[in-house]
Length: 185
Length: 267
Image 1 (tube, rainbow over the protein chains, first blue to last red):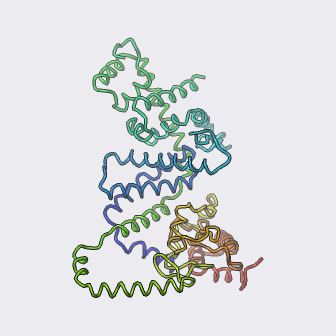
Image 2: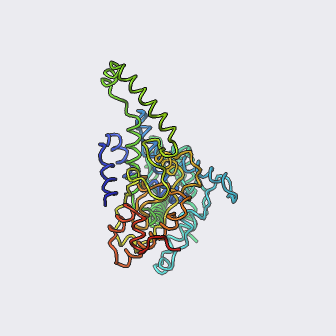
Image 3: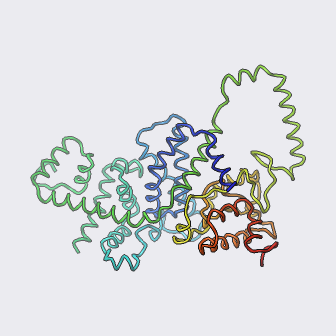
């Protein structure tokens, strides 16, 4: 395919700089995790992909300017979170059918998708139960849980969501208490 | 919590598990846990809850994650562009350049002359990066050669149909800039994939072009019909995927004529 061959040639002709390679390597490590987190908070997939691109372009500029390399994992999650909130607020302004302030429409989050018949046949009731509990949590608690599921420490979650360590622990403790109460029923 | 009589709270158990308790309290928590079955059981419950949640979280979201190949290629292209924009000219070149004032002034004069001519012939030539005719029905091959996402026939035919996505606004702006039509009325153009994602086209700026809505004959609807036709032919096993990608990227109008056996778009 002449066109595609030309594109590949064009794409490979300038040798990537070490910084470009570093950012692409971080993208390989992090992009699934970032996108999954964004999806879990109700960001549509196309917006999520665009946000992830913006995050790594911002990371490139951040490193290009010689800024801190400390805990880049939390840094990329923090930028993704901020961009998703910013985009959500911008979309809200553009749309007539608004949802409650500060709340991502919960019906769009991963927990809302009803289990399909195959899941039900497989007896995946535990997953459905967890989903319904997750759906009922406040937005901040859902975000804390999702970030925890992505392997962030409580300190990192606090940095991403701009919360104190105690507030993160309180949020997760509250969520887990709800899981436990549901288990007892 | 320092007393063995008062149990650890869930928050303390969580912070202890992450090593986030201050050292003295961490020691107290450890000794309390060693003695207290209630707290040990609760700690186990918390860990189990987190494990179950992580399992449900991945089970539900992982199937939605797209292939990273397209976004990765797009990022690489954008990073290369940003690096090129930022790269300063080497110092020694600048010094040498400053020594050739006459040549520099002659060059400036030539540049101004060429610029004036280009402005005079503006309806014919427009572009920020080069001199390209504003596209109407056909993409500029040097800007939009077509890029695939590295998927195979089975992924195209048996997975959820990847309909043309809405191209993000920022990417649309970049496409317009590439083509030197950044000041154009947005409704006059539709940023379209040259190789549609339904045929394995990538989310890459080199696979996107501004298709004019003003074309009455070879317009976006006609190209959509070709994309559907090629998808059907590929999935029916009557056409090789690579051939379909090659034909639509090299000359989509010729491909339309070939696969619909007509010289004009069908109504």
